[in-house]
Length: 61
Image (cartoon, helix red, strand yellow):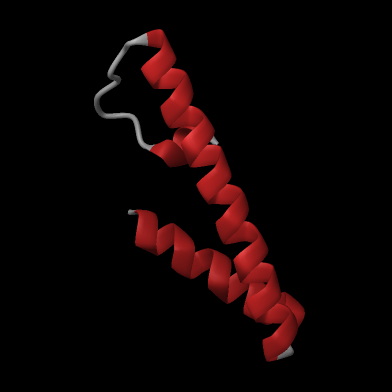
């Protein structure tokens, strides 16, 4: 599921951006943003002390 979303993002960026350099930069920016959001979510869940099953990080971002 996650890789499918990633592929869609990559495809959309390639269509919008066109040039490879800007495309790589955009992918890195989005990837770092997603990683930061994921870390924030995990920290929040740990602080709350709850484990939520069946909910993927994509739904929280």
